[in-house]
Image (cartoon, rainbow, N blue to C red; front, side, top):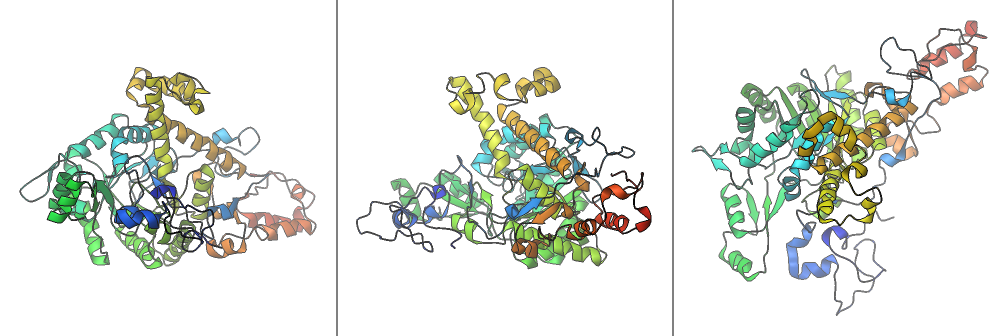
Length: 567
Protein backbone atom coordinates (compact mmCIF):
# COMPACT_ATOMS: atom_id res chain seq x y z
CA UNK A 1 0.00 0.00 0.00
CA UNK A 2 1.38 3.38 -1.02
CA UNK A 3 0.34 6.26 1.25
CA UNK A 4 0.99 9.02 -1.26
CA UNK A 5 1.55 9.34 -5.00
CA UNK A 6 3.99 12.21 -5.69
CA UNK A 7 4.85 14.13 -8.87
CA UNK A 8 1.34 15.45 -9.65
CA UNK A 9 -1.17 17.30 -7.51
CA UNK A 10 -3.71 20.07 -7.83
CA UNK A 11 -1.82 22.07 -5.20
CA UNK A 12 1.18 22.42 -7.51
CA UNK A 13 -0.93 22.68 -10.66
CA UNK A 14 0.51 19.49 -12.13
CA UNK A 15 -0.99 16.35 -13.63
CA UNK A 16 0.16 13.05 -15.11
CA UNK A 17 -0.39 12.36 -18.80
CA UNK A 18 -1.13 8.67 -18.22
CA UNK A 19 -3.58 6.95 -15.91
CA UNK A 20 -0.89 4.34 -15.23
CA UNK A 21 1.47 5.79 -12.63
CA UNK A 22 4.28 4.19 -10.62
CA UNK A 23 3.13 4.49 -6.98
CA UNK A 24 6.56 5.18 -5.48
CA UNK A 25 7.79 7.83 -7.92
CA UNK A 26 4.53 9.17 -9.31
CA UNK A 27 6.05 9.01 -12.80
CA UNK A 28 3.91 7.70 -15.64
CA UNK A 29 4.56 4.01 -16.25
CA UNK A 30 5.56 4.91 -19.81
CA UNK A 31 7.45 8.24 -19.81
CA UNK A 32 7.60 9.26 -23.47
CA UNK A 33 10.18 11.46 -25.16
CA UNK A 34 8.08 14.22 -26.69
CA UNK A 35 5.45 14.34 -23.91
CA UNK A 36 3.88 17.79 -23.68
CA UNK A 37 3.52 17.70 -19.87
CA UNK A 38 2.79 18.54 -17.23
CA UNK A 39 3.79 16.50 -14.20
CA UNK A 40 6.05 18.03 -11.58
CA UNK A 41 9.15 16.55 -13.17
CA UNK A 42 8.14 18.09 -16.50
CA UNK A 43 7.37 21.58 -15.18
CA UNK A 44 10.35 21.54 -12.80
CA UNK A 45 12.60 21.09 -15.81
CA UNK A 46 12.10 24.76 -16.73
CA UNK A 47 10.49 26.39 -13.66
CA UNK A 48 12.76 24.76 -11.08
CA UNK A 49 12.25 25.72 -7.44
CA UNK A 50 8.83 27.22 -8.09
CA UNK A 51 7.41 23.68 -8.06
CA UNK A 52 8.40 23.23 -4.42
CA UNK A 53 5.43 25.37 -3.41
CA UNK A 54 1.67 25.36 -3.89
CA UNK A 55 0.71 27.59 -6.79
CA UNK A 56 -1.67 30.57 -6.97
CA UNK A 57 -0.14 32.13 -3.87
CA UNK A 58 -2.52 34.50 -2.10
CA UNK A 59 -5.64 32.97 -3.66
CA UNK A 60 -5.58 29.50 -2.15
CA UNK A 61 -4.62 27.43 0.84
CA UNK A 62 -3.18 23.93 0.53
CA UNK A 63 -3.40 20.87 2.73
CA UNK A 64 -1.16 17.84 2.44
CA UNK A 65 -3.02 14.70 1.36
CA UNK A 66 -0.81 11.84 2.50
CA UNK A 67 -2.99 9.01 3.80
CA UNK A 68 -1.38 7.98 7.08
CA UNK A 69 -1.94 4.48 8.54
CA UNK A 70 -3.83 5.88 11.53
CA UNK A 71 -5.84 9.02 12.12
CA UNK A 72 -8.81 10.14 14.20
CA UNK A 73 -11.24 8.25 11.92
CA UNK A 74 -9.88 5.11 13.58
CA UNK A 75 -11.69 6.13 16.77
CA UNK A 76 -15.44 6.05 17.31
CA UNK A 77 -17.46 7.84 19.96
CA UNK A 78 -19.26 5.93 22.71
CA UNK A 79 -22.98 6.55 23.19
CA UNK A 80 -24.98 5.60 26.29
CA UNK A 81 -28.60 5.02 27.27
CA UNK A 82 -28.17 6.28 30.84
CA UNK A 83 -26.34 9.07 32.65
CA UNK A 84 -26.00 12.83 32.53
CA UNK A 85 -22.53 14.00 33.57
CA UNK A 86 -21.87 17.70 33.90
CA UNK A 87 -25.34 19.11 34.46
CA UNK A 88 -25.46 22.19 36.70
CA UNK A 89 -25.14 21.51 40.43
CA UNK A 90 -28.38 20.29 41.90
CA UNK A 91 -29.98 19.40 38.56
CA UNK A 92 -30.99 15.74 38.29
CA UNK A 93 -30.60 14.00 34.96
CA UNK A 94 -33.90 13.06 33.35
CA UNK A 95 -35.50 13.26 29.89
CA UNK A 96 -36.51 16.86 30.52
CA UNK A 97 -33.16 18.18 31.72
CA UNK A 98 -30.73 16.02 29.71
CA UNK A 99 -31.52 17.55 26.32
CA UNK A 100 -28.80 18.50 23.89
CA UNK A 101 -29.52 22.27 23.80
CA UNK A 102 -28.56 22.27 27.51
CA UNK A 103 -25.03 21.09 26.72
CA UNK A 104 -22.47 23.78 27.56
CA UNK A 105 -19.67 24.15 25.03
CA UNK A 106 -17.66 26.84 26.82
CA UNK A 107 -14.04 26.16 27.67
CA UNK A 108 -11.15 28.07 29.17
CA UNK A 109 -7.36 28.02 29.21
CA UNK A 110 -4.64 29.66 31.24
CA UNK A 111 -2.35 28.94 34.18
CA UNK A 112 -3.90 31.46 36.58
CA UNK A 113 -5.62 34.15 34.50
CA UNK A 114 -8.09 32.17 32.42
CA UNK A 115 -9.43 33.04 28.98
CA UNK A 116 -12.97 31.83 28.33
CA UNK A 117 -14.23 30.86 24.89
CA UNK A 118 -17.75 30.12 23.71
CA UNK A 119 -16.48 27.03 21.90
CA UNK A 120 -13.46 24.75 22.35
CA UNK A 121 -11.97 25.91 19.05
CA UNK A 122 -9.83 28.82 17.86
CA UNK A 123 -8.17 29.94 14.66
CA UNK A 124 -4.85 28.79 13.33
CA UNK A 125 -2.17 31.42 13.03
CA UNK A 126 -3.14 33.98 10.38
CA UNK A 127 0.19 35.63 9.73
CA UNK A 128 2.08 37.20 6.85
CA UNK A 129 0.55 35.25 3.97
CA UNK A 130 -1.40 37.28 1.44
CA UNK A 131 -4.58 35.27 1.95
CA UNK A 132 -4.53 36.12 5.66
CA UNK A 133 -3.85 39.80 5.00
CA UNK A 134 -6.57 40.40 2.44
CA UNK A 135 -9.22 38.45 4.37
CA UNK A 136 -8.28 39.64 7.87
CA UNK A 137 -11.42 41.72 8.39
CA UNK A 138 -13.63 38.68 7.75
CA UNK A 139 -11.58 36.27 9.86
CA UNK A 140 -10.99 38.64 12.78
CA UNK A 141 -14.51 40.01 13.19
CA UNK A 142 -15.91 36.51 12.70
CA UNK A 143 -13.78 35.18 15.55
CA UNK A 144 -14.69 38.16 17.74
CA UNK A 145 -18.45 37.76 17.37
CA UNK A 146 -18.21 33.96 17.70
CA UNK A 147 -16.41 34.33 21.04
CA UNK A 148 -13.25 32.42 20.15
CA UNK A 149 -9.56 33.28 20.27
CA UNK A 150 -7.85 34.67 17.17
CA UNK A 151 -4.15 34.02 16.53
CA UNK A 152 -2.27 36.69 14.60
CA UNK A 153 0.70 34.82 13.16
CA UNK A 154 4.38 35.54 12.70
CA UNK A 155 6.09 38.15 10.51
CA UNK A 156 3.13 40.53 10.20
CA UNK A 157 5.23 43.52 11.23
CA UNK A 158 8.32 42.34 9.38
CA UNK A 159 6.69 42.41 5.95
CA UNK A 160 4.56 45.51 6.57
CA UNK A 161 5.25 47.96 3.68
CA UNK A 162 4.66 50.81 6.14
CA UNK A 163 7.02 49.49 8.82
CA UNK A 164 9.15 52.12 10.54
CA UNK A 165 12.14 51.26 12.72
CA UNK A 166 13.84 53.40 15.34
CA UNK A 167 17.56 54.03 15.68
CA UNK A 168 17.97 50.68 17.44
CA UNK A 169 16.30 48.72 14.64
CA UNK A 170 13.13 48.20 16.68
CA UNK A 171 9.56 48.79 15.51
CA UNK A 172 8.30 52.31 16.01
CA UNK A 173 5.28 51.98 13.71
CA UNK A 174 3.52 49.09 11.97
CA UNK A 175 0.26 50.17 10.33
CA UNK A 176 -0.60 46.58 9.33
CA UNK A 177 -0.32 45.29 12.89
CA UNK A 178 -2.32 48.31 14.08
CA UNK A 179 -5.05 47.46 11.57
CA UNK A 180 -5.20 43.83 12.66
CA UNK A 181 -5.59 44.66 16.34
CA UNK A 182 -8.15 47.40 15.76
CA UNK A 183 -10.31 45.27 13.44
CA UNK A 184 -10.58 42.46 16.00
CA UNK A 185 -11.35 44.83 18.85
CA UNK A 186 -14.11 46.55 16.93
CA UNK A 187 -16.59 43.78 17.79
CA UNK A 188 -14.75 41.81 20.48
CA UNK A 189 -16.65 40.90 23.61
CA UNK A 190 -14.04 41.14 26.36
CA UNK A 191 -15.53 38.14 28.11
CA UNK A 192 -14.88 35.58 25.38
CA UNK A 193 -11.69 34.85 23.45
CA UNK A 194 -8.69 37.07 22.87
CA UNK A 195 -6.22 38.19 20.24
CA UNK A 196 -2.75 36.77 20.69
CA UNK A 197 0.27 37.55 18.51
CA UNK A 198 2.97 35.04 17.58
CA UNK A 199 6.70 35.71 17.60
CA UNK A 200 9.49 33.95 15.75
CA UNK A 201 13.20 34.81 15.55
CA UNK A 202 12.76 37.88 13.35
CA UNK A 203 9.77 39.13 15.33
CA UNK A 204 11.81 38.95 18.53
CA UNK A 205 14.69 40.86 16.97
CA UNK A 206 12.34 43.55 15.65
CA UNK A 207 10.66 44.01 19.05
CA UNK A 208 7.15 42.85 18.15
CA UNK A 209 6.35 41.99 21.78
CA UNK A 210 7.30 45.45 22.99
CA UNK A 211 5.30 47.10 20.20
CA UNK A 212 2.01 45.23 20.68
CA UNK A 213 2.23 45.65 24.45
CA UNK A 214 3.08 49.36 24.51
CA UNK A 215 0.93 50.42 21.53
CA UNK A 216 -2.07 48.14 22.03
CA UNK A 217 -1.88 46.72 25.55
CA UNK A 218 -2.24 43.11 24.42
CA UNK A 219 -2.19 40.70 27.34
CA UNK A 220 -0.95 37.54 25.59
CA UNK A 221 2.07 36.76 23.42
CA UNK A 222 2.83 33.43 21.77
CA UNK A 223 6.28 31.99 21.23
CA UNK A 224 6.52 29.89 18.09
CA UNK A 225 8.70 26.83 17.69
CA UNK A 226 6.97 25.50 14.60
CA UNK A 227 3.86 24.04 13.01
CA UNK A 228 2.58 20.90 11.34
CA UNK A 229 3.01 22.19 7.79
CA UNK A 230 6.80 22.40 7.73
CA UNK A 231 9.95 22.08 9.79
CA UNK A 232 11.56 25.33 8.63
CA UNK A 233 10.60 28.96 9.19
CA UNK A 234 7.68 30.67 7.53
CA UNK A 235 7.63 31.63 3.87
CA UNK A 236 5.78 34.00 1.62
CA UNK A 237 6.16 34.99 -2.02
CA UNK A 238 7.13 38.49 -3.05
CA UNK A 239 6.26 39.69 -6.54
CA UNK A 240 8.44 42.80 -6.85
CA UNK A 241 12.22 43.17 -6.91
CA UNK A 242 11.99 46.26 -4.73
CA UNK A 243 9.93 44.42 -2.14
CA UNK A 244 12.39 41.51 -2.10
CA UNK A 245 15.33 43.87 -1.59
CA UNK A 246 13.54 45.65 1.26
CA UNK A 247 12.82 42.40 3.09
CA UNK A 248 16.43 41.38 2.64
CA UNK A 249 17.51 44.67 4.20
CA UNK A 250 15.24 43.92 7.15
CA UNK A 251 17.17 40.74 7.82
CA UNK A 252 15.06 38.08 6.12
CA UNK A 253 16.40 35.28 3.92
CA UNK A 254 15.21 36.05 0.38
CA UNK A 255 15.66 33.63 -2.53
CA UNK A 256 16.72 33.89 -5.29
CA UNK A 257 19.09 36.51 -3.89
CA UNK A 258 17.62 39.81 -5.16
CA UNK A 259 20.92 41.64 -4.69
CA UNK A 260 22.66 39.56 -7.37
CA UNK A 261 22.92 41.20 -10.79
CA UNK A 262 22.10 37.98 -12.68
CA UNK A 263 18.95 37.53 -10.62
CA UNK A 264 17.93 41.12 -11.29
CA UNK A 265 18.51 40.60 -15.03
CA UNK A 266 16.41 37.42 -14.95
CA UNK A 267 13.65 39.34 -13.17
CA UNK A 268 13.67 42.10 -15.79
CA UNK A 269 13.60 39.52 -18.59
CA UNK A 270 10.58 37.84 -16.99
CA UNK A 271 12.26 34.52 -16.25
CA UNK A 272 11.98 35.19 -12.51
CA UNK A 273 8.55 36.48 -11.53
CA UNK A 274 8.63 36.06 -7.76
CA UNK A 275 10.91 35.76 -4.73
CA UNK A 276 10.62 33.70 -1.55
CA UNK A 277 10.97 35.25 1.87
CA UNK A 278 12.06 32.76 4.55
CA UNK A 279 12.30 32.99 8.33
CA UNK A 280 15.21 31.60 10.31
CA UNK A 281 15.29 28.37 12.27
CA UNK A 282 15.05 28.73 16.02
CA UNK A 283 17.30 26.97 18.53
CA UNK A 284 15.76 25.99 21.85
CA UNK A 285 17.58 25.46 25.12
CA UNK A 286 15.93 25.34 28.53
CA UNK A 287 17.98 28.31 29.71
CA UNK A 288 17.15 30.55 26.75
CA UNK A 289 13.49 29.54 26.72
CA UNK A 290 12.89 30.17 30.41
CA UNK A 291 14.83 33.43 30.19
CA UNK A 292 12.65 34.62 27.30
CA UNK A 293 9.46 33.76 29.18
CA UNK A 294 10.69 35.73 32.19
CA UNK A 295 11.65 38.66 29.94
CA UNK A 296 8.17 38.76 28.44
CA UNK A 297 6.55 38.58 31.86
CA UNK A 298 8.77 41.41 33.07
CA UNK A 299 7.59 43.48 30.10
CA UNK A 300 4.02 43.09 31.37
CA UNK A 301 2.36 40.21 29.50
CA UNK A 302 -0.22 38.45 31.64
CA UNK A 303 -0.25 35.27 29.55
CA UNK A 304 2.40 33.50 27.50
CA UNK A 305 1.63 30.64 25.16
CA UNK A 306 3.63 28.33 22.90
CA UNK A 307 2.97 26.88 19.44
CA UNK A 308 5.00 23.81 18.52
CA UNK A 309 4.92 21.52 15.53
CA UNK A 310 5.30 17.93 14.39
CA UNK A 311 8.88 17.58 15.57
CA UNK A 312 10.36 14.49 17.19
CA UNK A 313 9.27 13.15 20.57
CA UNK A 314 12.25 14.98 22.09
CA UNK A 315 10.92 18.43 21.14
CA UNK A 316 7.45 17.46 22.36
CA UNK A 317 8.90 16.45 25.73
CA UNK A 318 10.83 19.72 25.82
CA UNK A 319 7.68 21.73 25.15
CA UNK A 320 5.75 20.03 27.94
CA UNK A 321 8.55 19.98 30.52
CA UNK A 322 9.83 23.50 29.86
CA UNK A 323 6.25 24.72 29.57
CA UNK A 324 5.49 23.27 32.98
CA UNK A 325 8.51 24.95 34.53
CA UNK A 326 7.64 28.25 32.83
CA UNK A 327 3.97 27.98 33.88
CA UNK A 328 2.79 28.62 30.32
CA UNK A 329 -0.86 29.40 29.80
CA UNK A 330 -1.34 27.23 26.71
CA UNK A 331 0.70 24.93 24.48
CA UNK A 332 -0.67 24.23 21.00
CA UNK A 333 0.64 20.98 19.49
CA UNK A 334 0.28 20.90 15.70
CA UNK A 335 0.67 17.55 13.95
CA UNK A 336 1.37 16.56 10.37
CA UNK A 337 0.11 16.85 7.70
CA UNK A 338 -0.33 20.58 7.92
CA UNK A 339 -2.35 23.09 5.96
CA UNK A 340 -0.77 26.25 4.70
CA UNK A 341 -0.94 29.43 2.74
CA UNK A 342 2.67 28.87 1.65
CA UNK A 343 4.88 25.92 2.62
CA UNK A 344 7.07 23.51 0.64
CA UNK A 345 4.74 20.88 -0.79
CA UNK A 346 7.10 17.87 -0.48
CA UNK A 347 7.87 18.80 3.12
CA UNK A 348 4.20 19.14 4.01
CA UNK A 349 3.57 15.58 2.90
CA UNK A 350 6.71 13.82 4.07
CA UNK A 351 7.94 15.32 7.34
CA UNK A 352 6.88 15.13 10.94
CA UNK A 353 4.82 13.02 13.33
CA UNK A 354 1.18 12.79 12.17
CA UNK A 355 -1.46 14.28 14.44
CA UNK A 356 -2.94 11.04 15.83
CA UNK A 357 0.47 9.73 16.88
CA UNK A 358 1.75 13.09 18.14
CA UNK A 359 -1.31 13.76 20.26
CA UNK A 360 -1.12 10.24 21.70
CA UNK A 361 2.46 10.92 22.72
CA UNK A 362 1.44 14.25 24.22
CA UNK A 363 -1.12 12.53 26.45
CA UNK A 364 1.42 9.92 27.55
CA UNK A 365 4.03 12.56 28.34
CA UNK A 366 1.50 14.71 30.20
CA UNK A 367 0.51 11.71 32.31
CA UNK A 368 4.15 11.05 33.15
CA UNK A 369 4.70 14.65 34.27
CA UNK A 370 1.53 14.50 36.36
CA UNK A 371 2.65 11.32 38.08
CA UNK A 372 5.90 13.11 38.94
CA UNK A 373 3.89 15.83 40.65
CA UNK A 374 4.32 18.46 37.93
CA UNK A 375 1.46 20.56 36.66
CA UNK A 376 0.97 20.36 32.89
CA UNK A 377 -0.05 23.58 31.10
CA UNK A 378 -3.40 23.61 29.33
CA UNK A 379 -3.04 22.06 25.88
CA UNK A 380 -4.61 22.58 22.48
CA UNK A 381 -4.11 20.27 19.53
CA UNK A 382 -4.12 20.95 15.80
CA UNK A 383 -3.50 19.21 12.53
CA UNK A 384 -6.28 18.25 10.12
CA UNK A 385 -9.47 18.86 12.12
CA UNK A 386 -12.53 20.28 10.36
CA UNK A 387 -15.68 18.91 12.03
CA UNK A 388 -17.26 18.73 15.46
CA UNK A 389 -16.76 14.96 15.76
CA UNK A 390 -13.01 15.47 15.34
CA UNK A 391 -13.08 18.17 18.00
CA UNK A 392 -14.88 15.83 20.40
CA UNK A 393 -12.39 13.02 19.76
CA UNK A 394 -9.41 15.31 20.31
CA UNK A 395 -10.83 16.66 23.58
CA UNK A 396 -11.68 13.15 24.77
CA UNK A 397 -8.35 11.57 23.85
CA UNK A 398 -6.43 14.40 25.51
CA UNK A 399 -8.57 14.63 28.65
CA UNK A 400 -8.01 16.29 31.06
CA UNK A 401 -5.17 18.26 29.49
CA UNK A 402 -6.58 19.31 26.09
CA UNK A 403 -8.92 22.29 26.43
CA UNK A 404 -9.40 23.27 22.78
CA UNK A 405 -8.67 22.42 19.16
CA UNK A 406 -6.89 24.82 16.82
CA UNK A 407 -8.59 24.91 13.41
CA UNK A 408 -6.62 26.18 10.42
CA UNK A 409 -7.99 26.19 6.90
CA UNK A 410 -11.53 25.16 7.82
CA UNK A 411 -12.09 28.42 9.75
CA UNK A 412 -10.76 30.41 6.80
CA UNK A 413 -13.22 28.86 4.35
CA UNK A 414 -16.41 30.47 5.76
CA UNK A 415 -14.67 33.85 5.79
CA UNK A 416 -13.82 33.55 2.11
CA UNK A 417 -17.23 32.08 1.23
CA UNK A 418 -19.12 34.88 2.99
CA UNK A 419 -16.92 37.51 1.36
CA UNK A 420 -17.50 36.02 -2.08
CA UNK A 421 -21.26 35.77 -1.55
CA UNK A 422 -21.23 39.52 -0.91
CA UNK A 423 -19.30 40.16 -4.11
CA UNK A 424 -21.55 37.83 -6.13
CA UNK A 425 -24.63 39.63 -4.79
CA UNK A 426 -23.21 42.99 -5.85
CA UNK A 427 -22.59 41.67 -9.36
CA UNK A 428 -25.92 39.84 -9.55
CA UNK A 429 -24.10 36.60 -10.30
CA UNK A 430 -24.87 34.20 -7.48
CA UNK A 431 -23.87 30.62 -8.29
CA UNK A 432 -26.67 28.06 -8.10
CA UNK A 433 -25.01 26.49 -5.07
CA UNK A 434 -25.97 29.68 -3.20
CA UNK A 435 -29.02 31.03 -5.05
CA UNK A 436 -30.96 27.84 -4.34
CA UNK A 437 -31.33 29.19 -0.79
CA UNK A 438 -32.31 32.73 -1.77
CA UNK A 439 -31.12 35.97 -3.34
CA UNK A 440 -30.88 38.18 -0.23
CA UNK A 441 -28.48 37.94 2.70
CA UNK A 442 -31.41 37.39 5.07
CA UNK A 443 -32.39 34.32 3.05
CA UNK A 444 -28.91 32.95 2.45
CA UNK A 445 -27.37 33.16 5.94
CA UNK A 446 -29.38 31.23 8.54
CA UNK A 447 -27.71 33.22 11.35
CA UNK A 448 -28.36 36.66 9.88
CA UNK A 449 -31.56 37.45 11.81
CA UNK A 450 -29.92 36.24 15.02
CA UNK A 451 -27.05 38.64 14.46
CA UNK A 452 -29.47 41.44 13.53
CA UNK A 453 -31.21 40.99 16.88
CA UNK A 454 -27.84 41.09 18.63
CA UNK A 455 -26.21 44.00 16.81
CA UNK A 456 -29.05 46.00 15.29
CA UNK A 457 -27.91 48.63 12.79
CA UNK A 458 -24.27 47.83 13.62
CA UNK A 459 -24.68 44.60 11.67
CA UNK A 460 -24.14 46.66 8.52
CA UNK A 461 -20.54 47.16 9.66
CA UNK A 462 -19.95 43.41 9.98
CA UNK A 463 -18.67 41.95 6.69
CA UNK A 464 -20.40 38.92 5.27
CA UNK A 465 -17.22 36.88 5.65
CA UNK A 466 -17.52 37.39 9.40
CA UNK A 467 -21.17 36.34 9.23
CA UNK A 468 -19.93 33.20 7.48
CA UNK A 469 -17.43 32.46 10.25
CA UNK A 470 -20.09 32.98 12.92
CA UNK A 471 -22.57 30.75 11.06
CA UNK A 472 -19.98 28.01 10.69
CA UNK A 473 -19.16 28.22 14.41
CA UNK A 474 -22.85 27.89 15.28
CA UNK A 475 -23.00 24.68 13.22
CA UNK A 476 -19.94 23.44 15.12
CA UNK A 477 -21.63 24.30 18.41
CA UNK A 478 -24.89 22.48 17.72
CA UNK A 479 -23.11 19.47 16.26
CA UNK A 480 -20.87 19.28 19.31
CA UNK A 481 -23.87 19.61 21.64
CA UNK A 482 -25.56 16.67 19.93
CA UNK A 483 -22.50 14.42 20.14
CA UNK A 484 -21.84 15.38 23.76
CA UNK A 485 -25.46 14.72 24.74
CA UNK A 486 -25.28 11.29 23.13
CA UNK A 487 -22.22 10.58 25.27
CA UNK A 488 -24.05 12.04 28.27
CA UNK A 489 -21.43 14.77 28.77
CA UNK A 490 -23.17 18.09 29.37
CA UNK A 491 -20.07 20.25 29.68
CA UNK A 492 -16.62 20.09 28.09
CA UNK A 493 -14.86 18.97 31.26
CA UNK A 494 -17.18 15.93 31.48
CA UNK A 495 -15.78 14.46 28.24
CA UNK A 496 -13.24 11.70 28.94
CA UNK A 497 -11.15 9.04 27.26
CA UNK A 498 -13.77 6.48 28.27
CA UNK A 499 -16.04 8.09 25.68
CA UNK A 500 -13.91 6.72 22.84
CA UNK A 501 -13.21 3.27 21.41
CA UNK A 502 -10.55 2.24 18.92
CA UNK A 503 -11.73 0.53 15.75
CA UNK A 504 -8.46 -1.31 15.22
CA UNK A 505 -5.97 -2.88 17.56
CA UNK A 506 -3.25 -0.72 16.00
CA UNK A 507 -5.19 2.43 16.93
CA UNK A 508 -5.67 1.07 20.44
CA UNK A 509 -1.96 0.34 20.77
CA UNK A 510 -0.91 3.84 19.69
CA UNK A 511 -3.55 5.84 21.56
CA UNK A 512 -4.22 3.77 24.65
CA UNK A 513 -7.94 3.99 23.87
CA UNK A 514 -9.57 0.57 24.43
CA UNK A 515 -10.22 -1.61 21.39
CA UNK A 516 -13.97 -1.62 20.78
CA UNK A 517 -14.30 -5.32 21.68
CA UNK A 518 -12.66 -4.58 25.05
CA UNK A 519 -14.24 -1.22 25.92
CA UNK A 520 -16.64 -1.63 28.89
CA UNK A 521 -16.32 -5.40 28.46
CA UNK A 522 -15.88 -6.13 32.17
CA UNK A 523 -18.97 -4.13 33.07
CA UNK A 524 -21.00 -5.83 30.33
CA UNK A 525 -19.87 -9.30 31.43
CA UNK A 526 -20.96 -8.58 35.01
CA UNK A 527 -24.47 -7.81 33.78
CA UNK A 528 -24.53 -10.98 31.70
CA UNK A 529 -23.52 -12.99 34.74
CA UNK A 530 -26.87 -12.39 36.35
CA UNK A 531 -27.19 -8.76 37.35
CA UNK A 532 -29.21 -6.05 35.66
CA UNK A 533 -29.36 -2.33 36.11
CA UNK A 534 -33.01 -2.55 37.19
CA UNK A 535 -32.12 -4.51 40.35
CA UNK A 536 -30.84 -1.75 42.64
CA UNK A 537 -32.18 0.60 45.24
CA UNK A 538 -34.01 3.86 44.52
CA UNK A 539 -31.61 6.76 45.03
CA UNK A 540 -28.42 4.93 44.10
CA UNK A 541 -26.34 7.20 41.87
CA UNK A 542 -24.56 5.31 39.10
CA UNK A 543 -22.45 7.83 37.11
CA UNK A 544 -21.60 6.32 33.74
CA UNK A 545 -18.28 8.15 33.77
CA UNK A 546 -17.28 5.88 36.69
CA UNK A 547 -18.14 2.40 35.47
CA UNK A 548 -16.44 0.82 38.47
CA UNK A 549 -19.34 2.16 40.54
CA UNK A 550 -21.72 0.18 38.35
CA UNK A 551 -19.57 -2.89 38.80
CA UNK A 552 -19.54 -2.51 42.58
CA UNK A 553 -23.32 -2.25 42.67
CA UNK A 554 -23.73 -5.18 40.31
CA UNK A 555 -21.67 -7.35 42.65
CA UNK A 556 -23.40 -6.18 45.82
CA UNK A 557 -25.83 -9.03 46.50
CA UNK A 558 -27.56 -7.05 49.30
CA UNK A 559 -28.89 -4.53 46.77
CA UNK A 560 -30.58 -6.99 44.44
CA UNK A 561 -34.27 -6.66 43.58
CA UNK A 562 -34.18 -2.87 44.01
CA UNK A 563 -34.26 -0.08 41.43
CA UNK A 564 -31.68 2.75 41.09
CA UNK A 565 -31.92 6.31 39.95
CA UNK A 566 -29.33 6.76 37.20
CA UNK A 567 -27.38 10.01 36.89
